[in-house]
Length: 226
Image 1 (cartoon, rainbow, N blue to C red):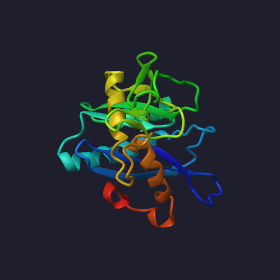
Image 2: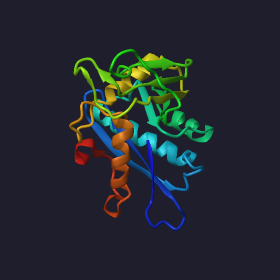
Image 3: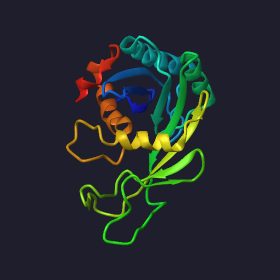
Image 4: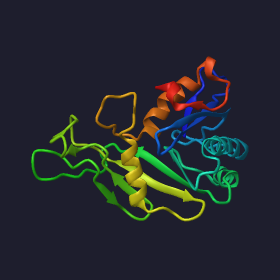
């Protein structure tokens, strides 16, 4: 999920957008409701109706593709989820669908790892703090390339499993998914991105979705934004 300020909006409303990424590589872009979702400098929260409508739209699009709802749905974002919107997400999901909220945020050097040798920490290194929180180095030395693509000691992402509807997934599974998602940005010729495509590409799609020509319409294939 991503939030973008609406240009020239007198009420300072923002647009909430979401993308659905599937394991087979397909994806769908959704535009949620506009509203006063900004509640702090770095915090955004939907009301119950908007949250429920957005997730119902996502699940319906998945059902159209696979004839059944997903067994598990991970919501990646850079904001947290309050009780109102999380309860709405859980109500919108079918009984058999587990919903998991994951926050992914870059860090500014508050955690560093160093290793002996000429290169920094190996890409994919993780430091688990507890069952909910971990640092993940999505950039770093790549043994297959025998080099590090970067100008300085890499900073990790801070990954937090915020909430889950039913069982909570293992942190190792969440981190492995994020690592895989750093390698499918089709708009880039880089070996990998520091941010997963669910965050990096969502920001760019959000810029498009707040344009006047994109204010209406239903779900659109991911390929339209490549």
